[in-house]
Image 1: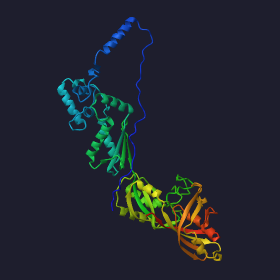
Image 2: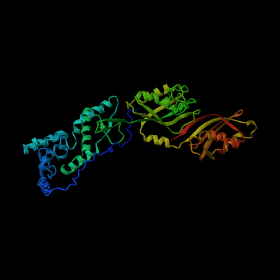
Image 3: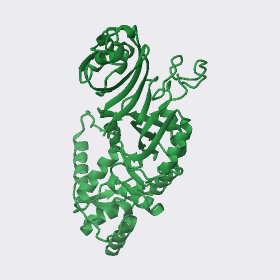
Image 4: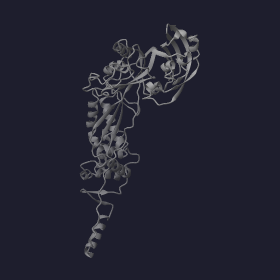
Length: 475
């Protein structure tokens, strides 16, 4: 049996920051200038625009330089202070080398063409990346520190960059970079990928269903890690009554737990649930934070679920371990179930299985035992009950669930009545019904809200004693 789960899930994490820096604008004075001052101003403006070259922080730059890979274009971007990482990605270099090594080679070749070129570099920060490539090692260290106790093999990586930096980088690269040169964000992510692979060669970077999703804030270098959930499919048998399918918050404290005497500060109305009897040993084994339970419908708290069991998917949230022998998980669950809940086997699955399970409309077979008022006086009760086989019934939303279900009339079919046993004033009945049938109400009619019903065909009051789900026909 396989121990590695299939990959799942999916998330968009490449949105841009919403803030933006705006440049301030200065306006000329409204005071009248003397003719002499006006002439000086005109002469000054003429001197400023007297050619393509002008002084930029002590260097002479040609802002009309051709784009890379032309030598003049490469010389121009070197003069404005681009780093080796950015020089390599916008120069159109064909060295086949990535990272800063490509830029270093391009820079050396440019220095050979112009020995004075090196002295003209005066920028403290690269105008394209603001030296973000120097933080790659720091970012990667933070990623592995955060994931030090987490098992993963696939990763999706994203980075947020300030909007003004992206716009300025795009402006310079579009004008002076080689056609098709790599944008900053893509190049930075690729550089981080390259460094992560050097540390862990087994990591695979994917666009869909990663084990972990990493998002880095390029302004603060904060690293956010989202460990994606894993999913187990199985079928459970509930062998004991009085156990809800999912956690039931305490009515007194509404799940807050602290200081509540009613639930003993557990936050739960019932100490056990199918979700926790199955999920807790798995959560502990995989070092997860929590679980969610997705069942194919649910039985009432006082109803057992027998036969081959009810299909379900267990969602395991933020697990530190993503693989485990499935036979061992089954054994741990059944030991923890303590003959209240048991499972037969598990399969790793994807989130898609949750929808399949939740949307299934499988017929079910039930056995129900009920007491009939003055049953001995009813003529041919078996024949009267058997008349419901194949009938379509109308069921208004039962009173017991009206607080959480929409008020409407549902039409459901009683597919067959398979067995009727009479024991004194009690009747035990096995029948197969369409999904969504309220079987208790089918017997006692819910004050006429279900029609026809066992009570209506017998003409006598019926009181349910117990109900079991015998089989869920999902094949």
